[in-house]
Length: 200
Image 1 (tube, rainbow, N blue to C red):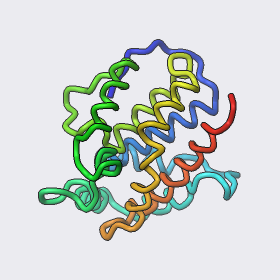
Image 2 (image 1 turned 180 degrees about the vertical axis):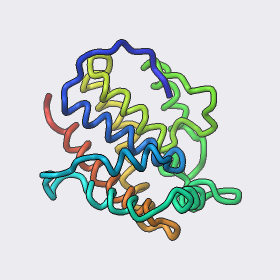
Image 3 (image 1 turned 45 degrees about the vertical axis):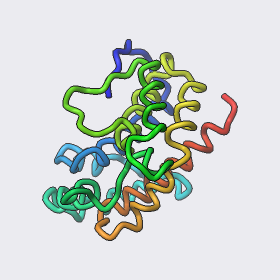
Protein backbone atom coordinates (compact mmCIF):
# COMPACT_ATOMS: atom_id res chain seq x y z
CA UNK A 1 0.00 0.00 0.00
CA UNK A 2 1.12 3.55 -0.57
CA UNK A 3 -0.21 7.01 0.09
CA UNK A 4 1.09 10.41 -0.97
CA UNK A 5 1.27 12.37 2.29
CA UNK A 6 3.12 15.45 3.45
CA UNK A 7 5.63 14.91 6.24
CA UNK A 8 4.79 16.43 9.61
CA UNK A 9 5.86 16.22 13.23
CA UNK A 10 4.32 13.07 14.72
CA UNK A 11 3.75 12.63 18.48
CA UNK A 12 5.88 9.93 20.11
CA UNK A 13 2.88 7.72 20.91
CA UNK A 14 1.79 7.76 17.27
CA UNK A 15 5.35 7.02 16.13
CA UNK A 16 5.42 3.99 18.41
CA UNK A 17 2.06 2.72 17.13
CA UNK A 18 3.12 3.32 13.55
CA UNK A 19 6.42 1.51 14.01
CA UNK A 20 4.77 -1.49 15.66
CA UNK A 21 2.17 -1.82 12.91
CA UNK A 22 4.87 -1.47 10.25
CA UNK A 23 6.99 -4.16 11.90
CA UNK A 24 4.04 -6.55 12.11
CA UNK A 25 3.22 -5.85 8.48
CA UNK A 26 6.79 -6.63 7.45
CA UNK A 27 7.00 -10.00 9.21
CA UNK A 28 3.53 -11.09 8.03
CA UNK A 29 3.90 -10.02 4.40
CA UNK A 30 7.17 -11.77 3.60
CA UNK A 31 9.96 -13.86 5.14
CA UNK A 32 12.13 -11.94 7.58
CA UNK A 33 15.06 -10.21 5.95
CA UNK A 34 18.41 -9.58 7.60
CA UNK A 35 17.32 -5.95 8.00
CA UNK A 36 14.20 -6.98 9.93
CA UNK A 37 16.23 -9.31 12.16
CA UNK A 38 18.72 -6.52 12.85
CA UNK A 39 15.91 -4.06 13.56
CA UNK A 40 14.14 -6.40 15.96
CA UNK A 41 17.25 -7.30 17.89
CA UNK A 42 18.33 -3.64 18.13
CA UNK A 43 15.13 -2.37 19.77
CA UNK A 44 15.85 -1.32 23.35
CA UNK A 45 13.14 -2.71 25.61
CA UNK A 46 14.92 -1.88 28.87
CA UNK A 47 12.38 -0.76 31.42
CA UNK A 48 9.37 -1.96 29.43
CA UNK A 49 6.73 -3.16 31.89
CA UNK A 50 5.31 -6.66 31.83
CA UNK A 51 1.86 -5.27 31.09
CA UNK A 52 2.92 -3.92 27.71
CA UNK A 53 3.94 -5.76 24.56
CA UNK A 54 6.06 -8.95 24.84
CA UNK A 55 9.09 -7.50 23.08
CA UNK A 56 11.55 -9.73 24.94
CA UNK A 57 9.83 -12.91 23.77
CA UNK A 58 9.76 -11.66 20.16
CA UNK A 59 13.44 -10.71 20.27
CA UNK A 60 14.40 -14.00 21.88
CA UNK A 61 12.54 -16.00 19.25
CA UNK A 62 14.20 -14.28 16.32
CA UNK A 63 17.64 -14.38 17.94
CA UNK A 64 17.59 -18.22 17.90
CA UNK A 65 16.45 -18.57 14.26
CA UNK A 66 18.30 -18.15 10.98
CA UNK A 67 17.00 -16.60 7.77
CA UNK A 68 16.52 -19.95 6.01
CA UNK A 69 14.45 -21.30 8.91
CA UNK A 70 12.38 -18.11 8.98
CA UNK A 71 11.73 -18.31 5.23
CA UNK A 72 10.69 -21.97 5.49
CA UNK A 73 8.36 -21.19 8.38
CA UNK A 74 6.75 -18.25 6.57
CA UNK A 75 6.22 -20.39 3.46
CA UNK A 76 4.67 -23.26 5.43
CA UNK A 77 2.31 -20.95 7.29
CA UNK A 78 1.18 -18.57 4.56
CA UNK A 79 2.08 -20.02 1.13
CA UNK A 80 2.52 -23.79 1.13
CA UNK A 81 1.96 -26.11 -1.81
CA UNK A 82 -1.37 -24.78 -3.01
CA UNK A 83 -2.03 -22.96 0.24
CA UNK A 84 -0.39 -22.43 3.59
CA UNK A 85 -1.53 -23.68 6.97
CA UNK A 86 -3.28 -20.35 7.57
CA UNK A 87 -5.25 -18.01 5.31
CA UNK A 88 -4.49 -14.55 6.76
CA UNK A 89 -7.35 -12.69 5.08
CA UNK A 90 -10.19 -10.73 6.62
CA UNK A 91 -12.78 -12.18 4.26
CA UNK A 92 -11.88 -15.73 5.30
CA UNK A 93 -12.23 -14.95 8.99
CA UNK A 94 -15.40 -12.90 8.60
CA UNK A 95 -17.25 -15.03 6.00
CA UNK A 96 -15.32 -18.28 5.58
CA UNK A 97 -14.47 -17.48 1.96
CA UNK A 98 -11.82 -15.57 0.02
CA UNK A 99 -12.58 -12.22 -1.64
CA UNK A 100 -16.08 -11.71 -0.25
CA UNK A 101 -17.96 -8.52 0.68
CA UNK A 102 -15.54 -7.49 3.47
CA UNK A 103 -12.80 -7.17 0.83
CA UNK A 104 -15.04 -5.07 -1.42
CA UNK A 105 -15.90 -2.82 1.54
CA UNK A 106 -12.20 -2.52 2.40
CA UNK A 107 -11.30 -1.55 -1.16
CA UNK A 108 -13.93 1.19 -1.10
CA UNK A 109 -12.61 2.58 2.18
CA UNK A 110 -8.98 2.41 1.04
CA UNK A 111 -9.83 4.34 -2.12
CA UNK A 112 -11.68 6.99 -0.13
CA UNK A 113 -8.67 7.33 2.20
CA UNK A 114 -6.30 7.81 -0.73
CA UNK A 115 -4.49 4.47 -0.68
CA UNK A 116 -3.38 2.68 -3.82
CA UNK A 117 -2.21 -0.90 -4.25
CA UNK A 118 1.48 -1.14 -5.15
CA UNK A 119 2.17 -2.59 -8.61
CA UNK A 120 4.17 -5.55 -7.27
CA UNK A 121 1.43 -6.59 -4.81
CA UNK A 122 -0.07 -10.03 -5.41
CA UNK A 123 -2.10 -10.47 -2.22
CA UNK A 124 -5.65 -9.18 -1.65
CA UNK A 125 -5.85 -6.00 0.39
CA UNK A 126 -7.42 -7.78 3.36
CA UNK A 127 -4.19 -9.68 4.08
CA UNK A 128 -3.26 -9.20 7.75
CA UNK A 129 0.14 -7.79 6.83
CA UNK A 130 -1.29 -5.31 4.33
CA UNK A 131 -3.79 -4.04 6.89
CA UNK A 132 -1.00 -3.56 9.43
CA UNK A 133 0.91 -1.56 6.81
CA UNK A 134 -2.12 0.68 6.24
CA UNK A 135 -2.55 1.29 9.96
CA UNK A 136 1.17 2.00 10.22
CA UNK A 137 0.83 4.76 7.63
CA UNK A 138 -2.29 6.15 9.28
CA UNK A 139 -0.84 6.14 12.80
CA UNK A 140 2.29 7.83 11.46
CA UNK A 141 0.24 10.59 9.78
CA UNK A 142 -2.29 11.70 12.43
CA UNK A 143 -2.83 15.08 10.73
CA UNK A 144 -4.08 13.30 7.62
CA UNK A 145 -5.78 10.42 9.45
CA UNK A 146 -7.15 11.69 12.77
CA UNK A 147 -8.15 9.48 15.68
CA UNK A 148 -11.74 8.95 14.53
CA UNK A 149 -10.61 7.93 11.04
CA UNK A 150 -8.13 5.41 12.43
CA UNK A 151 -10.73 4.11 14.87
CA UNK A 152 -13.34 3.61 12.14
CA UNK A 153 -10.89 1.75 9.91
CA UNK A 154 -9.59 -0.45 12.72
CA UNK A 155 -13.06 -1.21 14.05
CA UNK A 156 -14.41 -2.16 10.65
CA UNK A 157 -11.52 -4.01 9.05
CA UNK A 158 -9.23 -5.33 11.81
CA UNK A 159 -10.80 -5.45 15.25
CA UNK A 160 -13.46 -8.07 14.42
CA UNK A 161 -11.03 -10.80 13.33
CA UNK A 162 -7.33 -10.17 13.91
CA UNK A 163 -7.28 -11.50 17.48
CA UNK A 164 -8.61 -14.80 16.14
CA UNK A 165 -5.97 -14.79 13.41
CA UNK A 166 -3.15 -14.24 15.91
CA UNK A 167 -4.62 -16.99 18.12
CA UNK A 168 -4.46 -19.34 15.13
CA UNK A 169 -0.89 -18.26 14.46
CA UNK A 170 0.05 -19.13 18.04
CA UNK A 171 -1.53 -22.60 17.71
CA UNK A 172 -0.31 -23.34 14.17
CA UNK A 173 1.62 -26.58 13.72
CA UNK A 174 4.38 -24.85 11.73
CA UNK A 175 4.83 -21.87 14.06
CA UNK A 176 8.20 -21.34 15.71
CA UNK A 177 9.24 -17.71 15.55
CA UNK A 178 5.73 -16.91 14.35
CA UNK A 179 4.26 -18.22 17.59
CA UNK A 180 5.99 -15.28 19.24
CA UNK A 181 4.67 -13.01 16.46
CA UNK A 182 1.17 -14.29 17.24
CA UNK A 183 1.52 -13.56 20.95
CA UNK A 184 2.94 -10.13 20.21
CA UNK A 185 0.23 -9.35 17.63
CA UNK A 186 -2.57 -10.50 19.93
CA UNK A 187 -1.27 -8.28 22.73
CA UNK A 188 -0.92 -5.32 20.36
CA UNK A 189 -4.45 -5.69 18.96
CA UNK A 190 -5.79 -5.81 22.54
CA UNK A 191 -3.82 -2.65 23.31
CA UNK A 192 -5.22 -0.95 20.20
CA UNK A 193 -8.78 -1.88 21.18
CA UNK A 194 -8.22 -0.23 24.56
CA UNK A 195 -6.64 2.77 22.86
CA UNK A 196 -9.65 3.31 20.59
CA UNK A 197 -12.05 2.93 23.52
CA UNK A 198 -10.49 6.03 25.11
CA UNK A 199 -11.82 9.49 24.35
CA UNK A 200 -9.18 11.67 22.67
